[in-house]
Image 1 (cartoon, rainbow, N blue to C red):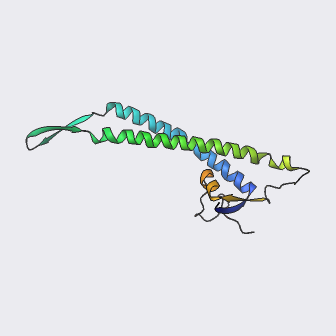
Image 2: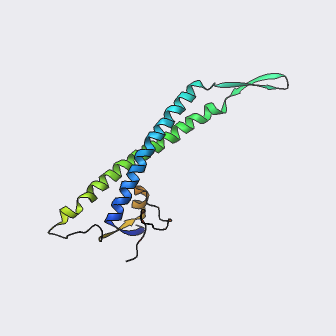
Image 3: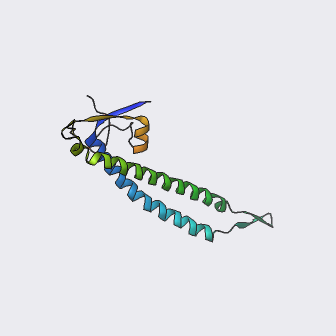
Length: 143
């Protein structure tokens, strides 16, 4: 298991809310793009005629081949974002009431309690390690 950054629960929660917002803004754009691709695909001719040396040749339209690949790519992006959205919602649910659930036992303060993420967690939650930490983004903190 490869270890990633240690961040406070509060910063993680803020990052997850920001990431969830971005995902919810991106999914409709991708769905609109997908619908547009479907409409374009219906109107693209399957073959095109080219005149080469006074001869008319028929060949397959390259766009007719490329659009199904774009379909697949866009559909995979949508599914990936939907899976991330579900995961982030689950993690946010855990984080939102962690302070109340810990009262009397561990008394966790989200602004002070740090968690160390694995690199896999960082990938799944959309945390980029190569960016320098800022106030609004999640980054590694020194203890």
